[in-house]
Image (tube, rainbow, N blue to C red; front, side, top):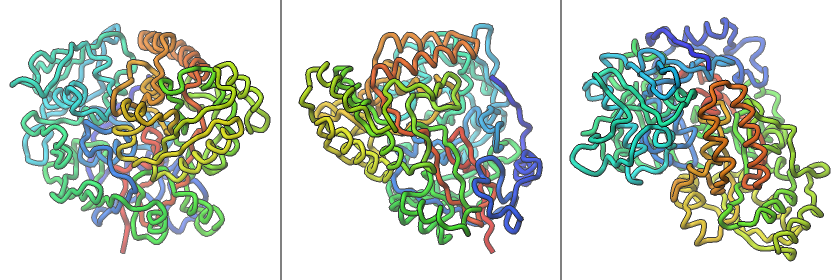
Length: 581
């Protein structure tokens, strides 16, 4: 794993850093290449160090939670960095360097012991919250404890720390001293953290980029209510009028010191997020210039996509990057228990139709395996369920139905996120294709914000409502097989609510291979293990890949310092500014 250390950059120099990282070749308005398609995928577009103004976002669905310790949506991880600094971050540069790690709150990159079971991190001195109090190591220790060891109070975020820290059961919300007995993270002084892991974990620094390392003082924590007014460690703070489902407005945090922050130039005076806006309206307002960014970050909806692709005049405002994500369908193993029945579904779907439902060529490439092509260990040529022109092999599907005793077909429910037009259209494609072998699919739509917390990711709800299928999208928490797929295929990741191993795959051989990968230092050997896992997941027919995702993003002329950040599968929001007369 490559490590990269950055010098700390003052506010006025941040845009210069971004520009120089591109060799000065980034383009702005009026250049000869202003109509060049897809500039933002590889270079900095419209560089500027201009401060001031209001940067306006809109999104259709709400946060799963505005609490940095209780969120797992990709856009949320990106946006919340405005008010939540993490131990490490990704390099704010376009291109190959974008997924390299660098210090944020940390003073330098973490240091491991010889077998990668202990990691030591020093944080910068003098960092402050919005109230002027100092950020200390114990605040980060508590933030990690509350997000992973809380008795189910906060259940929506990843659980890497609880999986890997050498820590007995703990609940910070029980007892008078929340950290009594929480010994897997030591804080020998106010500026040092020492992490003790159960086993070797050479990829552990990637976990330190996550929002759960954003500091939280014990006295500030209010459990689930903390999201109503998060204590800011970043350049912006809540303006006191956060309305879940409606809006979140941020204003400058006067105690943030730009000299300590290499990630956030903090150009706008205000950042405003409007929540609950229909996707078609967001798309139109983007093109009209009424808002600056679709916070979801996954691109315009189907209606606007067709309009923009046909308009030569706006080609220079469009980016079409591979996101690094997989769009897929979970086949819920507790509901469709027989593997042959699940394999029947894999054979019967019309992959070409699903691909077209997702947007065809601008929407991505047909996927037949689990790991995206950029992940070491991926084999995109693998296809255990081939068919002519991707239309489905109905004879093979019927044979599998006979093998599982359902030769006349069966019925099941497909859960879909109501606000995602691509998923809704994909669900219709699945329903039509499976009907050809008498598998009757009932499509049910649920709100995105609660999809995993209360619906498709709730074990009780899935069983009570016979949900056999659900549509999902997943991107890497970091770019490795483990960072991409462990949380959706390892049995230990299954949770009663907030479950992202939504298929509830719990295969001993797959689990053992994931565990072996953690103990394997050589990256090529790890990649070989990840390829084995990929094949086994497909054999289990627990995940049906749909597309390796691409997004079509509209970028306004007023938006500055724009580039695609694959670590977040969208634009890097932190450098953005606005340049309006």
